[in-house]
Amino acid sequence: MPRRKTVQPEPLERFYLPDGTEVEVIDETCWPVGRGQHSALEFTEKRFNPIIEDLGRILEKSDGIEKVRAILASPSTFVKHIAEIGVFGEEGIDDSNARKIWYKKVKLCMQSYINALRLHKGRT
Image (cartoon, rainbow, N blue to C red; front, side, top):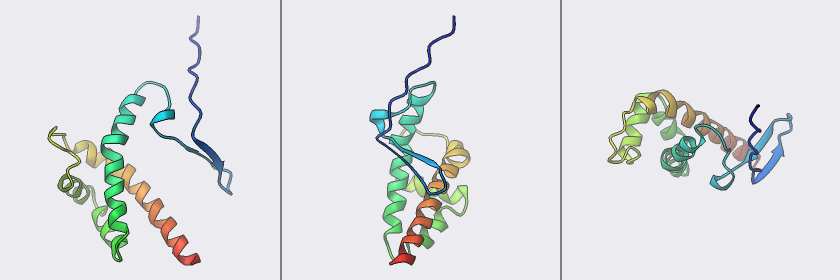
């Protein structure tokens, strides 16, 4: 007999972009239920959010976009920067995951944020 499907929690907010893309806003209270999702939540809380917050503080400066682009120029410069801000901590994490996986996720997020900033500045 097949298992029942897992009931997923509702997102905090759901809206649609002009091109029809659905966007869901979630946090730890409505994180999806499923295999590996506890690890994804742990990664987001311990690694991804601190990196994005640090790069966001850098973006607030007058030459921030150039500095963030320099940090994200290669996986090596990215890993060097996050090691300096203490994301690896004392756990001695192998930086190969940071080079292969984290770098791509952070770069995509920051490129979206930079593009949004440029659009906003162009309108004001």
